[in-house]
Image 1 (cartoon, rainbow, N blue to C red):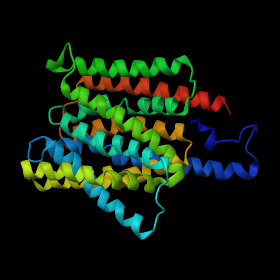
Image 2: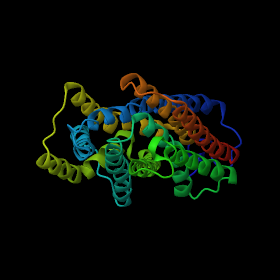
Image 3: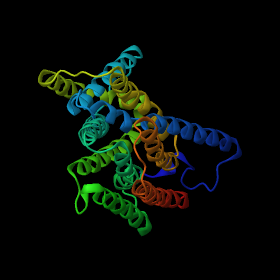
Image 4: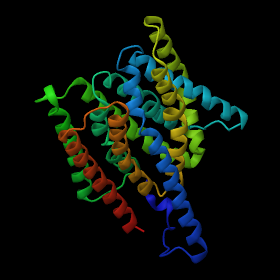
Length: 321
């Protein structure tokens, strides 16, 4: 995958005056949709923490139940607009998207946040922009400069170091940190593949089909959880759960994939760098979590490395034009 697909055609040196204005408008639209998606996602970690913190709702129920709600919402517009079925390899690619953003990320973060704070989770998940860029590079068989791999690797090391040095976790990673790192890998894969697939199926169609595809599995998981432990909660906890199902799992992806599909994908992906900052702020405001210097410094280090990796790849793509 290269970003030339959203820029100039091969062999052309510049965009003609007649095409420059539409291209600029498309770029602004992509950034706007991307920012809207990131704003929606920034509440996901704090709201997940709210639902699982006191044990009234099990992580399995939260991770699966939110996907079931989103799948029901997704089925309605697919049916009403009579969307054509995906074809051939598109089903397999939808499986990758579903495994990453519908199954993997929600379940792994739900279990991780039973013990990890929202602020802690936000710092580790700050690796997501760099991870998405790495997956996109591998997926598209690009050959970025060595600087890209150095900065992406530095970001990973910064996140691991932060997690290892937190409180009583000195000297090793807690199981919740491993779950968060797994969630980052799952979401990065789903984001990269979903961004490509959205150009073929459409933005909301991509996440909708992924949700419908995974609905039987997630419904079974939610049913198993309810059979073992009937969920309960305060109005605030149920409101947070509703947000996860309606916005985090559906409407947010509508905006995010629309932004990636409109592009340029490398530029839009940089907007993800705002997400951990917003999430940490929400954790402090909504959950009253203390933002100590380790959290601030860890966030700065991870976000700086992620930004360098994404910008290095963007500069490489721009130079190829």
